[in-house]
Structures are given as structure tokens and as C-alpha cells.
Image (cartoon, rainbow, N blue to C red; front, side):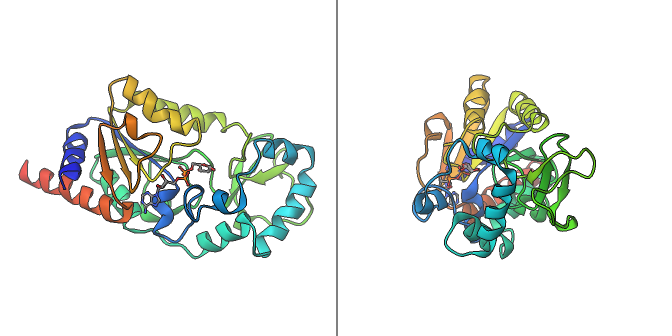
Length: 261
Ligand code: APR
């Protein structure tokens, strides 16, 4: 409990705390993480950093494989789709949203593409790796819910500019859409506290955010059952599953707020 109180002290005293979340936050919603035991990349291998180039060179072939994989068990696309389609926000997501409602967390940068933060009520949300339920035009950048788009011809083309449409999810080797990256960088530059929840810190640029914030004097809190590459940068480490730690953290901050009235 000491680490939760220490984390609550930091967040309660912060002027502009933000959260950076990863797949571990959705693990208790039944969505597999990518690394570690039972991770999708552990099971199937991590996609190549040439994935986006391969898409660009043959978008039709990419879409044909994608649509087939979505319906065929035994690949990471199927496993992730099956898990996300059946997932609901867990107490960890709800606690992050409550911290935003309390005015403690000002924004959430998530690496997750599952949409569970929005469903939990988070509003000031930056999905740095996109959202799997959206499509995005690689020419004009326009995004639309996949459910509103009938995918007939492959590759699908943008009704606005005729550009090629891909999944909104950022692929390995694909640049983060500039507007999203700029917005994330602005939050990292502004924050005086960063709450890391369920990320291994394995993928940049997100993995650099805590280091950049710490260099500026921000206080870093990590919530994770095990140590990660980011643990050395954390001022406070709360070891445990987000679905248990985050509600306790929100409760600790809520009781401080009540006492201080
Ligand atoms: N609560 C909190 N953390 C957890 C839990 C849990 N219940 N279960 C697992 N974790 C932690 C693991 O210990 C690990 O540190 O979540 C982290 C998951 O790490 P990754 O699987 O690497 O996921 P993430 O950090 O989000 O990966 C970043 O890599 O492949 C890309 O696009 C993918 O967005 C993803 C990015």
C-alpha cells in the first residue's frame, strides 16, 4: 500500500498528470499482450519492420490476406480480433477514466488499438497506434469507422481523395500520423507527472515519452506486475495488475481530495 500512497501523493500534488498505457491494461479484459508469456508476438513472432512497406507495395494482396486472417484461426489478427470483439473495459480502464473525471489525469496516451479507454469514459485520449475499428486513408489521412464502410473492391479507396485506405492501426515501419505524434509530444512536454500502466516500454516513440518527461523533471509512476525497461526511470513502482492497482490508486486520491475539503 505504501507504493500506492506514494503514487497518490505524486498525482494529487501534480498540476498536469498524464497517463501512458499499454496492452497490460487490457489484459484483464481478456485481450492478449504482445510480449511476455502468452503474448501475441511471443506466440507468432513480431511482425517485420517492413510491414508497412509490404502493404504499400501490394495493398490489394495485403487486404486479401487481412480479410482471410480475420476469419481463420491460428494467426495474431484472428486472435486479437476475437479477443477485442468480446472485450469490455475492466476496472483498470474505469479507474483511468475516473482519474480524468476527477481532474487528476489530464490526458491519456494509449498504445492500445482496442478502443476500451473510450468505452470506459476517457475523453482526452490520444491513440498513438490508432484504433482497430477505424479505417484511414494513407493520402489525405481521413479516418472513418470500419463499420460504416462496405469493403468491396480491394484495396478500398478513399471516397474523398481516391487514396488507398488501410486499417487505422499503425503498422510496424509506418510513421505515426504527424498530428497524433505532435499532440502526444505536446502532452509529454507539458506534464509534471506521467502514470505508466501496462506497458513494456519496448516500442518507440511511446517508450521515449517517460524518459523525455523525466528529463524535464516530471515524476514517473509505473503500474506493472513485473519490472520493465521503463522501471529504472520510475520514481514510484506499483507492482500488480492494473485491474487491482488502478482502483486502489483512484480510491487513495479520492480520499485525499475529501480530506482536503
Ligand atoms: N496489469 C498491468 N500490466 C500488465 C498486466 C496487468 N494485468 N498484464 C501484463 N502486464 C504488463 C506486462 O508485464 C508488460 O510489461 O503489460 C506489458 C505489456 O507489454 P507489451 O505486450 O509489450 O505491450 P505494449 O507495451 O503495449 O507494446 C507496445 O508494441 O507491438 C507493439 O503496437 C504494439 O502497442 C503495442 C506496442
